[in-house]
Image 1 (tube, helix red, strand yellow):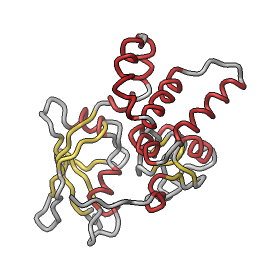
Image 2 (cartoon, helix red, strand yellow):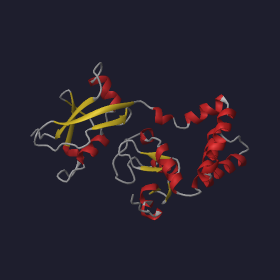
Image 3 (cartoon, one colour):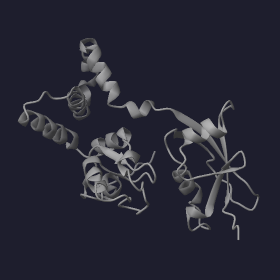
Image 4 (cartoon, rainbow, N blue to C red):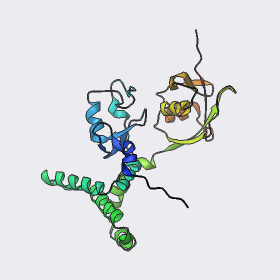
Length: 242
């Protein structure tokens, strides 16, 4: 089996925040375009802006902070790729709470323990049994809450072309969070050499055109209620009404 080593700087562009040029901390994607930033950087940026820093798409005219999420999977990847980053960040958190004479939250304590396990994998099997037996119910609940987005409801989708003149997708079966809007789906479909912009696409459900700001939950409730999964969506080139 052939293996190839990849140097960290080759993937730095994918795991750094373009607002501060540092590794992602508390990775936070924009719901509309899925570009990811460090949470503190993005919140500060959106206090005076309503567009994505990377693609300049309008997130929301008045309340852009309501259209950002949390990506614990991406953050786990960053912590595993960058040696010592998680321990340094958790130490900063503990020092911050100590300066304010406040109790350190349980999720930070839990993340610190997991970071030590990553750095010392030979002790994982030895400590796993002890940790599970010593965990309090409140600690277990806090650990689950720190990854609550992973348990969000999802919807299965089938993307079908509305005309034989259009291209077919190799991956037409996808699964998305119900709070996601249709804009990422348009961008996913538009990634073809012969389509310059996702704005040239219409997405339909039951022959009705859907807006790019509609969430999948809204589509399921209003257009696909009482029907079996997957949610069937059709796409076509936008029709010129003139």
